[in-house]
Amino acid sequence: MISFKEFDNGFPYIEVLNDAACAEIAFQGAHIFHFSLCEGEPLLWLSEESDFEFSKAIRGGVPICWPAFGMNNQSLEQHGFARVEMWELVSADEIDERTTQVILKLTHTIKSLKKWHYKFALTLKITISDTLTMELTTLNLDEHPFILTQAFHTYFQVSNISDVSIKGLDSKPYLDALTSKNHTQIKDITFNQEIDRVYQEVDKEIILKDKYRSVKIKNEGSSSAVVWNPWIEKSKRMSAMSEQAYKSFVCIESANAFEDFKVIQPNESHTLKATIY
Image (cartoon, rainbow, N blue to C red; front, side, top):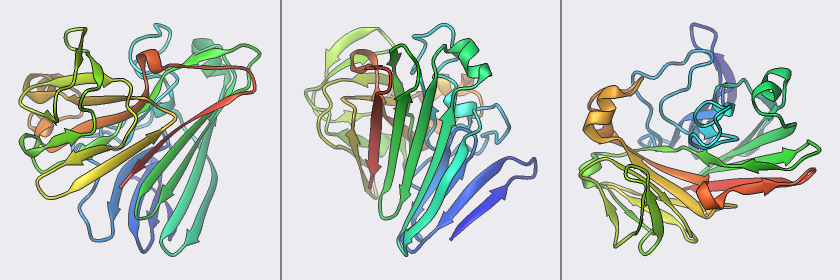
């Protein structure tokens, strides 16, 4: 079942229910803010203090960082503008009893061209079933090539950050964004302090191992991934987040970041795909 709903302030979203899973997707940012298997715990973390307000980013779920990821473009807000723009529904289809597909799109406007001087068509295809699959396709409609960095900034709900480990990044090089130093990962990632790392040469699935479940993330069109948890002090300073929120989530972000940036030629496209199961 596909339903079109809105919060009391008129903020619109799509609710999907099928025999395998349920999901909620905001039109603003094409932002998936809930996904769970039927009768299961939410896979995605959503801040209890998150705002569902127009032009304000949602804290949690899967923010789409596009066309810039981080502060590498001074003309754009951090993580770009796609996550706070209103997307258009292309289609919403029940493929079968266990599979629903939603497609949304965003295109250039007079407003977007003032801060990012390129014409584009951006499409997100979301498949909701036993797995959550997201396919973000960027088509360059401009006469000039452009550089693209982007990410699915996915917040995963966990029982307690102290019980979490991340597998699949052993021996991978990474940039520690807190120190601006490069390192190589040794063994699994565990948490006892703030972590903000950009991993490169990622070529296999990443496994988030929690106390009660394991979640797998498979990326395509990407060889970089970000692992982030703000820990105690940064949580106190962040908007729409309680001081204790760091305990209940970890971000594993499917990305094209740093040397994994893409150059999109006119009339060419690139797809970033993440499958979570």
